[in-house]
Length: 346
Image (spheres, rainbow, N blue to C red):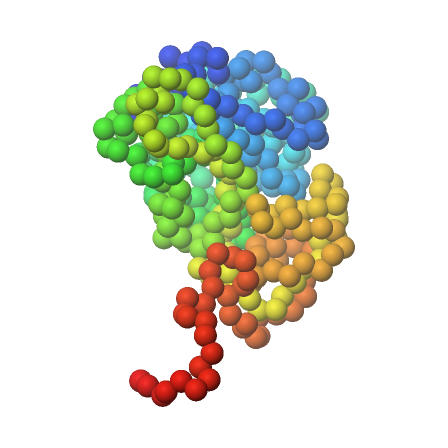
């Protein structure tokens, strides 16, 4: 599959217009990113095949690794956001894409007013990050944009990401997921694979795989259905439904498998420049500035142990446990009836 993917992205595709489905189509960026995107080189933009936006908040000075960096669009965008004190490294296996990315190092350094480049690109497979010059516990954030689905060993990728992240660091990435497991016959189709469809994980397999790799509580940030818009490919896929989704996974070893209630709360200070009124952690945590916001123990830790800590006040501790946190998809599974008058039994 490596050779098929390299051929598809290196030789068959010359721009995003050559894609046969809408799986690798980007979403509209927020207003604050548009001026930066406008400064990127046209060739870098035209050879971009991502499916989401992987630019989380609070990036100044961060060290970021991009898995499957392609033409370098996300690397260069993030290089502007981390500033000269930050660093962004891209890893890709396709010579043609790396050539595009490396051609424009000086262009983007000058465009963003940096006295030195804060970007570099490495050739390699994302399943073999241990073979590259990458230090354990070095990165604040690892990103990826519609590439994990192309991997032939997704468990190895996710485990390596955890190894490379600092404690409290974050894996923030977009990818394509399916509503069921992909039949093996479809998984071998090079076009469907190259279009980011037949290599897509069933969403629940992804959740369980992430937990086995040490990311106890994956958080869905946003998602959208993919409509494919190619009748022949739609027919081949049958009833399988696909989604583009962005997840964030925090490297915090004390996270629990479920959302447990310790009576805690946070107050967002409104100090993130592009999120003054509301900080969105995930698709069910939109935290308004100045308001006491009850949280489970995992959410507390994701904020208190990460780069977001200075932007919150923290209320409570872990001394008293009150059971599962309401609204987190779990509840006491037992029949809820009164025991009054019931006979004793064992």
